[in-house]
Amino acid sequence: MTALNPESTEAITLGLHDASPQHLVDAMADDVAVEMGWGRLIFGQTFADPARLAEVLRQEGHGRRDICMYAREPHVLVAMAPAELFIDPSHTYRLRFSDDDALRTAPTGFTVRSLERPEEAEDINRVYVRCGMVPAPVEVLWDNSEGRDALDYLVAVRDDDGSLVGTVTGVDHKRLFDDPENGSSLWTLAVDPTTSLPGVGAALTRALAALYRDRGRAYMDLSVAHDNEAAIGLYEKLGFERVPVMAVKRKNAINEPLFTHPPETVDDLNPYARIIADEAMRRGIWVEVLDAGAGEMRLSHGGRSVITRESLSEYTSAVAMARCDDKRLTRRLVSEAGIQVPKGRLATFDEHDHAFLEAVGDVVVKPTRGEQGKGITVGVNDTDELDAALARARQEHPNVLIEQRAPGDDLRLVVIDGKVVAAALRKPAEIVGTGHHTIRELIEAQSRRRAAATGGESRIPMDDVTEATVAEAGFSFDDVLPEGRTLRVRRTANLHQGGTIHDVTGKVNPHLSEVAVKAADAIGIPVTGIDLLVPDVTAPDYVFIEANERPGLANHEPQPTAKAFVDFLFPGSPALPQAWTPDEVPTS
Image (cartoon, rainbow, N blue to C red; front, side):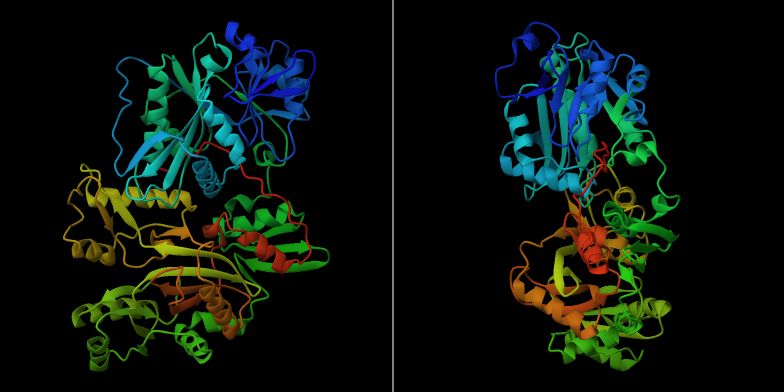
């Protein structure tokens, strides 16, 4: 917590586990700010002088984002420094507590509890980054939570493996500055966009509200971007109502999109192009959007100009791109380089295909050309299913490849300029039963969450493959999935079809990285995603699957994929610190 000295504009920083200053105990404090790690929460109602409040906001540190709430006259405050301050285009929502609030509901598949260990503060930061929010120093998060006084950090952890999938921070106004309105507020609600668990954001919000209601608080406030329709819909469903409270912020690089218009079509870029544009703009590289729908941009700096289409650039030759595009040719090139590939054959659509299936027992069928998992069928083990899979693949391209299915998980290794910069396991789409919703409803809800988390890039198709995958488990779309039951609804781990990605960069066996670099070299491609099937990411065993000439770099945050890509395009350009926006955006 930060209490400002009444005689100067210098800040005195106090940990919440320390004894509170006497003036915070006896009456409402003067000039109260709370250090959150990403910036300060400044409580404007505790400032008697708007000029002094404006000066405090102007003292915001570099790379930070302070937020002033409850200023008595926000328009007057902004008028004190109109070139430096602005009114944030967010709404404030309030949940007024009553005795009959239905705030205690048992979540399915996860538990909401308080932060317990410093290591969990690191996990909180991982979730922040995956949600595009500003991370905070771990020691600040832990010191704030350890006091258990005015700040409350709640986390959502999976029941099966204990992994952290969501977090929310609360501020108790009564404990902080003896608030005469007896209020509280919610901040930095974040849910891991890769989780398949439903209702995490709602459960965290209810749990924090229940905590403050039980303490006797009158209400809980939160701030949400005016155009965040998904978040607003959730809050209104939980009983929040809008109140006329405004937030004031300082004009800085992080907040710039809120008070100025970025280049007209940059906001129209998908996440895979936008992450590159953001990295380039942070370095002072000029970004000209040529085709937002295709993610095509011209990047210019220091006399060099490069056209990119997401992570595909002019430095990837047409030959290398054609090699990646033709999966049969890719197999031959990497096999000749000594890389292990599964047994396979080009489909002839006759009894020879059936004979190959009988010989190997279980196959994957895929068009030799295509992307985003279209036309691929995994786990084919009888002739009727093989014929159907061949027909599906043939709709995407006339040439179809049949490969022996290898055991293991789908590992994507991103290679940029001869180095592996990220590694992640990709897992097929899953749903978790609630005991109340049908499988169709759960798939649709999970698909909406994946689409929201990826800018519309990831959705679960409601097609024959999904229906067949559900049927293999003994269910139909109209069945109610038992509470807590996890059901895989797609066979492939493709992210565009609802799959999720899980970072393993720090765990991957060095030999697998060597294989990925060797495969990229054999193809002759500088930026690629190499896909392997591995029984264990820490072991050297693998089977090569394919190479992608345009890997989605945004899927691998917080690994520095965009940084490595821009380093490759513009060697020597200054790599500045990341500047994320800490909006409260629930994704579940």
